[in-house]
Image (tube, rainbow, N blue to C red):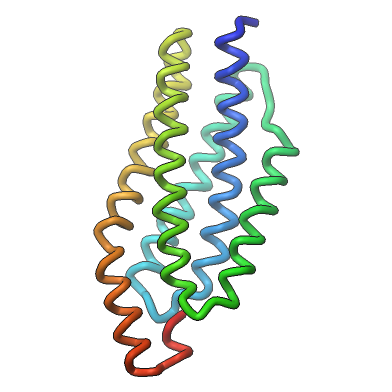
Length: 169
């Protein structure tokens, strides 16, 4: 196995773990966004995309005769559970969640950009195609979140002004 292929396989495993982490993180957020129905719905849609992204990455690894990294997947999920749990006690959870999600989307965008370049460099066109599909979904989510940061902030602040503590979430 070439060194370039080994790197790409490692990065595919990292991306799979990243999607497992994203699934856990999004699942934790979605149940606490009743007062933000538009955000909740977009996260629900992206959660479905995230599950498909992980599945596609797993299939790429299998086609290469490789498997996912159970340790990386577990570590990512554990980190996400900690993030979700810590946000639960924050009165500005929706804002911290928005910030974390926007940041995480950009990390995913960078990861897929790297994977596409690696796959193209070693002639793994199917891996490049799958990663491009995942990249487009991540870019769309990042754009949506970016477009909605200001409105979400204003909604949060107006609810804070009204002193409706339960509605902040």
